[in-house]
Length: 236
Ligand SMILES: [Zn+2]
Image (cartoon, rainbow, N blue to C red):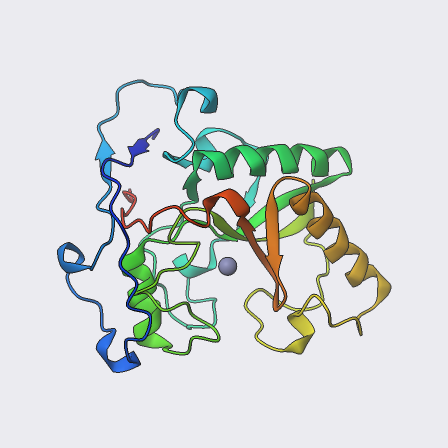
């Protein structure tokens, strides 16, 4: 089903970053402080419009624009560090500008015989609250009051696989929280270092930046100031 989500009202995000952990239990979505309330526009056309025809900050479903990606959206399963499912169903939404950069990066990777596989994409702010309730440790989960770039539609958690679906060895699993997952931990076989380097070089060439402690996480630089969003996608 093709859907376009339009961001209606820009709202200034109020940062109460110093809130204590215990105070950060998810309030009703309507009461989230300073969180943009996105709206879903009814389906108007049978086909998704070209990405050139939607604004950079519009949220889109990536699979409506490319069949060349692979998905293993872990938070829609219990196979993640929280050991519980926090999405009702697996979907990968991003802002349109993030999608354009991902499609361009994937085109380069495909020529080399690889494609991007997603572990996580846009994450509604209400889900960030849920994750914080389960695991309130800022080392592993961004404080939902401030919001993460996943909540802004500009971050993705990814790896590489071959075009016939064999995942490349990156040295650790997704969401492995230890030194072995750090970019500057070089005590891995050369094959692992090469795989990470390939992903990093291609992503950086398309406007993404990495964080030192997670080889799988990439932020689109131009999305880091976009507002935190909170729409939830429909599930069948
Ligand atoms: Zn991430």
